[in-house]
Length: 315
Image (cartoon, rainbow, N blue to C red):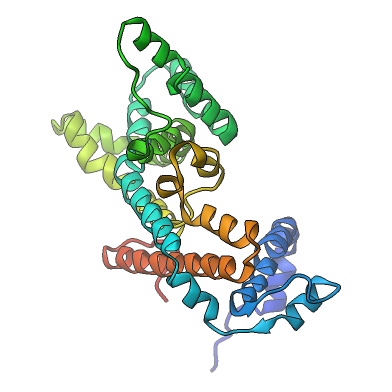
């Protein structure tokens, strides 16, 4: 006698979940309009795009000449592109080593503070700079470390020559990483604090009862509890690897020079918008997205090899 299955049809699931679907509709439309629809503009990377070829943007797309991979050929022959790519990858590697672990360390230190009031105060102070614009952040560093800033005045009053911090291209990578740490490390700490709160306190109590010290509890309980979150954020960071920022670099580009401050985002702006070579700018943006996709899929595959879920489960 055949048994009746409880498998729900698509209509049953829609009837059951329509309030949830209605709730996420605004977010879905936002992503659709501002992320997926603009993706269609990548067709410009394969055209000699001329915005004046028609009376409307659609006619400009239709009437612009198709040149295949000509924009990519011109892009890869441009020495400025390779300078921007080299600066972007160098900044990524530097920040993965010296910036990515800092929110984890801050979360561990703050989690060890016993007083709830003191913990809330420190947390508020640390993540407050996240809400500052890059204009304000760069201005603050200029007032502190610039040629006429507070540090330079103190050094001059002491009879010494102040160091060039804001205009030195050799240490620019350290400068922008320090700015990113001050602005966003506290905000990233919140995610790890939430992960720490999800760890069962009974694990610590049982380990302490067995004689495990603070460092052993950290190594065998805390870090394994954070591992999945760390891997997930690392994968997302690698997927966004070539997107290191625009405002922070364009604000300081003139001070340190193009060779030090040119990254892919500023390259797309100056090559694609300023000189109106839209096809080459679109090709650079598409190349950046393709590299990010490869990195995120590779990192996710490695996460599966280590038994972690990553950003999606294995099918």
